[in-house]
Image (cartoon, rainbow over the protein chains, first blue to last red):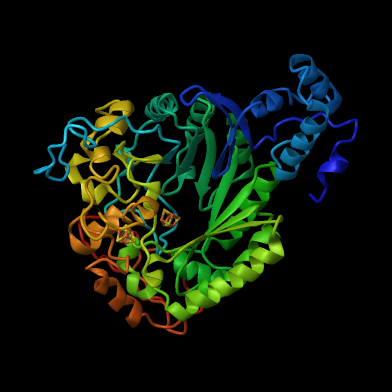
Length: 94
Length: 403
Ligand code: SF4
Ligand code: SF4
């Protein structure tokens, strides 16, 4: 897997959490988590809300549009694709 | 609670008067599903005295433990042993963990992992597999593990990758394989591993019996570290190389378990709950059982989990040492095993008054050219006949105590 973040952001990409990864809300600690082998990633701020939209149905444009609707004043169209690309590079999104 | 004496501590605002503060929730559970195992690794850290198969928790009992663990905050479990594949009901335990929202990793020797078994486990929600490897050369691996298993491991690795699960390898390092570190990493690359844990032997349980044969000399460790740094640079982004340091040789206490009762807990095959997998001997009858008590009480309030939590139990030199928040005074089980007193500073630490015990052993450590002669667990391992070096026949070192 040597694909870089930019090349994954093709219009056809419909991000979904990788099968080895569990995305869930931690009700005990009140945070969203990505659970990986040997590792737990705590998703801070809006990150959990973005991953929650990665359902394998929406493409990146649809995710951005949904977030722009929810947060009209946030720079979602630049930051969200970059964030998704980073998660892809880590192997957490497919 | 049987903590350290509090004479003289009368400050009303002082820490931990009376009931201990509520601990943070645990992140991880090590579930030791059985002590049974087809291998007899010389470095095995399981206790000398193993739980019998008939004493094991049932799948229903494990399901209950996993639900309680999830309620407590556990989000990850290692399903381990022994060899967890010996449990025919393993898929039910995996399903219970996954159903409770807990990420599951199978920790296995790979022996008897067949295609339909993998499919059933994936179906039940298994997320990841960690496979042990003893040596890149099959004959030497057989000598270390007390049985031939290299081909079974290679097949297991392939099945795991074909099932689309991430594969980690775990190689316990010692005198007989530290110089083969690069070949171990090559093996991992060939088998499609994402991660290799290069874990220097920790001397607990059975491994303590074989300490003289396992302990490397410092030159060997230095060579391995050098190779590791080069490989890390070469493989950055391709494979994660995790190094578990040799505390004896480094003369440095490890931050054992991230602190006593701080991050994770272990449940043994018969349901004993421990703050550390090696703590059974130290705690003796004080170790609580999930069969008698709720896990919540065990984590928050049991004497076993509160005894060395935090820093109140520490004596000098740890008590005033600036590193106590980094390494938590090292390992309680090691202090107990080497000095008979679990509240002493870990003798691996060069500042410990008992460090001479460890230093003498390291100074006496023989080089890699010395033949490896191990004491194996009963029952006697078979098929070591083609190993390149003669192994001493297995000895029953503690008659009557083993299964
Ligand atoms: S270390 Fe070896 S003998 Fe011990 S449980 Fe693991 S595979 Fe079995
Ligand atoms: S004296 Fe105690 S706290 Fe200090 S480095 Fe040694 S083990 Fe760690």
